[in-house]
Image (cartoon, rainbow, N blue to C red):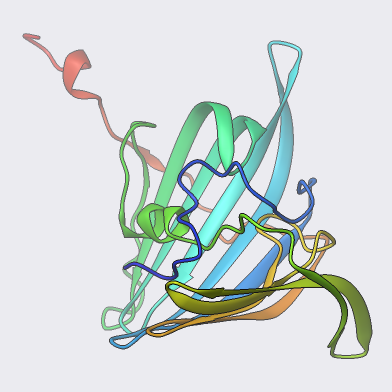
Length: 203
């Protein structure tokens, strides 16, 4: 699903929110012509890997029929990691209550949730400085508009990860639901480990 076009965020060399720390989380509602999605990004743990800090980065995409959860142990920027050490996936099929397989998969594999994250908006221009009222908070933010394609966005460097508060294009709307600290993982089960192809017998 292509979410927005001011600039696609594959490179992530753009204006963003603050770098997330352990416990940070943010959630969004994403509306397109065909579907509505709720997206949550969170840092749900921290470990040491060869004297370097490694973070558990969790991505949750909630749809009408399925919820996808990806939990990754990464080194570096969660949105552009230097290394992905582990990757755990949970799929919740809402038509089959109680059946939610949890799998540890090769770190190179991708699914719809990761593609959604790659298509998240990225801002090339700083924009106009504003104060944005979010609930009872007043947040220092920036307003950005584009005519080609027609789109507008409000973002803040105080919001973790992408920093987006609100974004609209011709086909898509993204709205910040909330953000905070003290995040915990929604994957508590021990995962089933899948064997990589090169490790199978006879290879």
